[in-house]
Image (cartoon, rainbow, N blue to C red; front, side, top):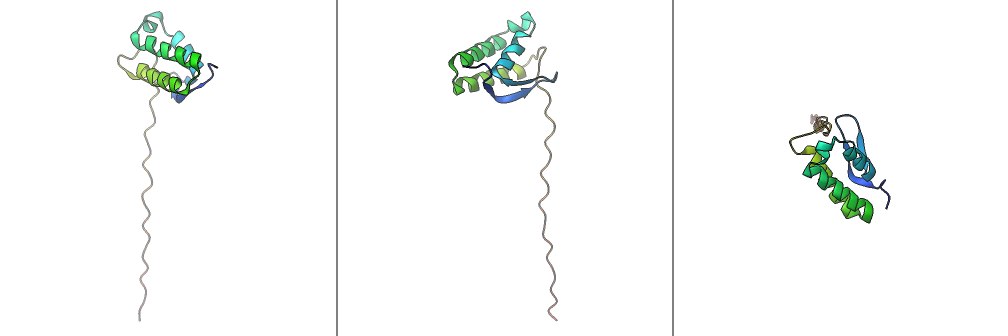
Length: 105
């Protein structure tokens, strides 16, 4: 299986990096300081990524993606975190058709 297999979703990090593939995620974890790499959340994420790369199964890639998201969002945050998402735009207001007044005279 190729480590270039896509994650179930794309993660944009606060530092501008984009995690699109299993390989991207693995490289990011390997770039963490040793103290952070030793944390259980990153150990779990690395294990799931390894399993997904070795098996090539889509369901394993989905599980690895979920574990990676947990590691990136659970407090306390470390040296990496997700970028803040821009606020969602409100949908446009529904247009109201003007009713025309007919002259009956």
